[in-house]
Length: 357
Image (tube, rainbow, N blue to C red):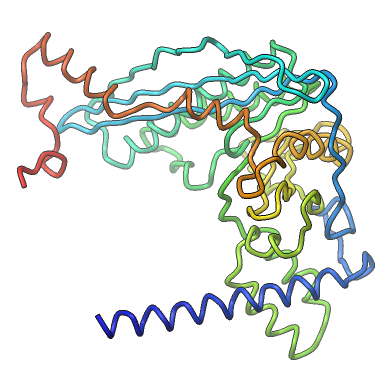
């Protein structure tokens, strides 16, 4: 145990030193002026941070959509259970006035059975099923005329969710891309944003390293760039942004599958409260992205700043609790099937899931 505690002390010292260095880097960046920024096609502003004014919620409708997923592999078939719910929060005179749900309060999960899929194909299909039902719910919620429509998570498929061309699941991926395009087209006149609560992206840090620090030649700057190489965006921006500030607007990495729609996708980070990391906000804007970013940031800040240690919009917290699928729901489905057909070998759980000890 003495050796373990010695190692823990060493790790703790490294963590403290790295955080101290990030604070110094943040202080250095705050002193930079707009002229120190090398703009490129991704960057829409020449300021590191932008103050955000709280929007007055005299009459506003926030809708947050989240999806739930449960999956169970068997020996020759797999079961996927998905559900998505939109929580509707109506505000009047700055206070929450009413709560509703789309399509309903208690949504029946959607069940899909997969035959003879590889383990990787099963993971792809399960992911696609969850995203598709979220997108369908987002489109339904647009008909409710939201002031701001929020998705829990990204507005584009993650690169790891893209299968190889010619694979068994690639056609399903293409249909998923078509669903995204339909959502963007329908959302043209609305404020649509995705809130990524625990982003692990380093896009912002990489830009600072290459385009800002890369223009300054000194030994100190080289040390700062080494720090950035091990720093995610939210780690850095926690120290750079004050509460009620957002980062500059950036274009998102262009997904060629999304065609022209991909060129209208942007992101920024917003610090909504003092003791929580900034959240990554992605949004679709066919018009002026700066104006839309200000509107979205002001609305999110207005409803997310009450808790000093948890800075997410309450409407997404409610959507998450309604959409979540518990293991017991899959157990009930399994029991129902077994009652109908008997405990056939196809319905045996994988050995790793039913070890007797």
